[in-house]
Amino acid sequence: MPKMSMVSERKGNRRAQQKLDKRERIRQAAWELFTTVGYEETTTKQVAAAADVATGTLFLYARDKRDLLCLVMHDRLGGVVDARFQTVPRQAPLLDQLMHLFRGLFEMYGEHPALSAAFIRHYPGADGPNGQQLNALTSKFLYLISQLVLDQQARGEVGADVEPLLAAANIFSLYFGALASWMTGFMSLEDALDPGLRRALALQIRGFRP
Image (cartoon, rainbow, N blue to C red; front, side, top):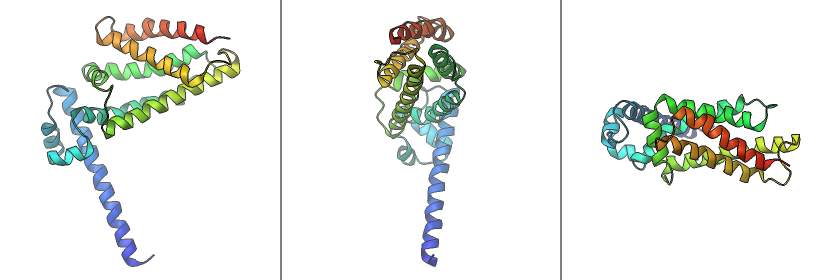
């Protein structure tokens, strides 16, 4: 490799690493402030100061405070989704599989309920770059659920005429509805999961049967 090319590559790698480092500092600063001071009470200026970056630099990584919230939540949600799908009981009925998935998410929300409530309230309609990444994660989540439905079709629990991706979208709607029942104070977070979401999913699955 020519010497100039090697130098350019090293510089490019260094710049890329610096960007990743800044993103992580911003994410950590936002997380610390959102969980201690509160999402509504925190300003982007405070996050930038805590991350030791200029406010203008922060906006290169998040369009606004809502997009910053999406940045904070993306890795946490992605980690739970990956971990739960890796450990889903493959031979269990669909209801038990889904409860395994959603229990992990509800447990994560329960660790920081005030921030989780802010996220659930502000995420719908988020269209910044981090919001778009979360939308992609949601699409991945729907696809993975659809694969569980497809597996259950092969086992005979779900009818062959059921569209797996449409079924996954219905399941996700019930999940979000359960979160809304908690957000509005109708149920505690624990009750929104079980019996709330469990009963709703059981009813939906009855409609999936052959």
